[in-house]
Length: 233
Ligand SMILES: CCCCCCCC/C=C\CCCCCCCC(=O)SCCNC(=O)CCNC(=O)[C@H](O)C(C)(C)COP(=O)(O)OP(=O)(O)OC[C@H]1O[C@@H](n2cnc3c(N)ncnc32)[C@H](O)[C@@H]1OP(=O)(O)O
Image 1 (cartoon, rainbow, N blue to C red):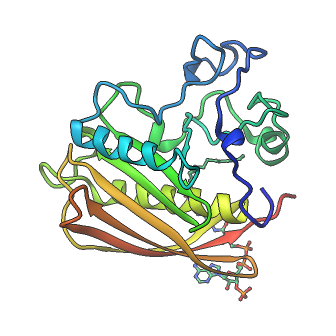
Image 2 (cartoon, rainbow, N blue to C red):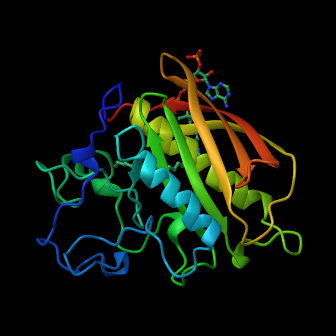
Image 3 (cartoon, helix red, strand yellow):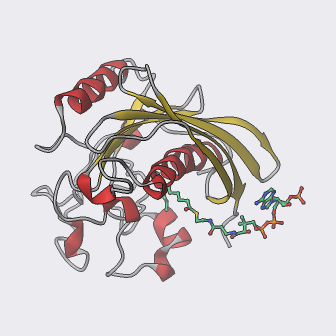
């Protein structure tokens, strides 16, 4: 979490965390291994198009160029062999420990049923300072009939570039997000949210993002953003 990205394959590998069982964060849906449930893995609601893009990026991850980012129901720090438990992880204790509640959920992971809201998986390319999200908006994100609400598109853009900025710069907050909505996104379709850090000036992190249809033929939205680094304490 310093000023440069230090993500390694090892830091993204699942490691067992049995110490905290299913309490007190039972809603995280712990897996049998004792790990909190990772939502960035295929489920029955994913369309073939979503699976195809997911598999494409998993393939690209084999040489370490891209890394799949695990996704839980709260903003958990990445687990490392030294710190295999998210709830005793020093970053979490340091950054969020005192504010954590048993009753909160990350906005984009708030629905219980698969496929109704945000289905997504993020892949990070550390050397390009780029994050790509494979995203399938579900029926509960409707705005105009049959299309995703613009606010839901803003949320997935914010999270994609927010995640990218976190990996590159550490703890940041969105100061500005400007979006041009170019073409509506059909509910149930699959899009690629492609964001990257363009430059950093002191505490300021400037990013841009484009949302493309899976076939690359339709530009749904493009955005620019400013995130501000917030040092701990
Ligand atoms: C525990 C580990 C976790 C690990 C996770 C791993 C997995 C990652 C994967 C996925 C993650 C998903 C990620 C989700 C992301 C969600 C993001 C959000 O939704 S954030 C909520 C919405 N944003 C707010 O609520 C901010 C509210 N605003 C503020 O708090 C402040 O205004 C803040 C922090 C933005 C800036 O406040 P100041 O007091 O720190 O700094 P000042 O001095 O005001 O600004 C610094 C510089 O920036 C400029 N600036 C500030 N705001 C600006 C603006 N809107 N436009 C242009 N410039 C601005 C200023 O002019 C100043 O510039 P000069 O240094 O003077 O050159």
